[in-house]
Length: 132
Image 1 (tube, rainbow, N blue to C red):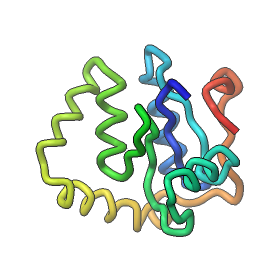
Image 2 (tube, helix red, strand yellow):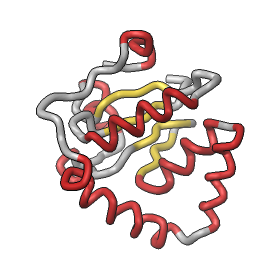
Image 3 (tube, helix red, strand yellow):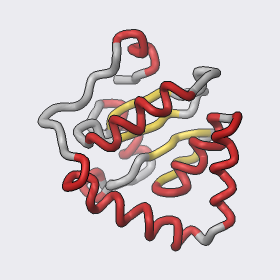
Image 4 (cartoon, helix red, strand yellow):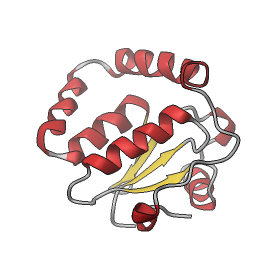
């Protein structure tokens, strides 16, 4: 796996919207995606010793590392390049503060944005960006 992979909650409306947002701004096509519920997502969680029941974060697998919560979001912004790269500047804030905000949104995401019964399916033109 050479491209960074974004793992997301496939039934979360906010998470699906975030993936669509990244797809629209990924001018160089660097990112691939997989839902946490997919076979690929499950294998990555096992590889890194993560408990699927406790994951409430987007994950980014890149350069042999796994990033979660605000670190994942900032690493994604950094790799988008262009204007979005300046978002990585939030790294100057302590991780515990960044993750405090991230956790607040994560705890409320289903209530605020809703939840699907099934995993979201991408637009067919982006099918090659998704791993099973």
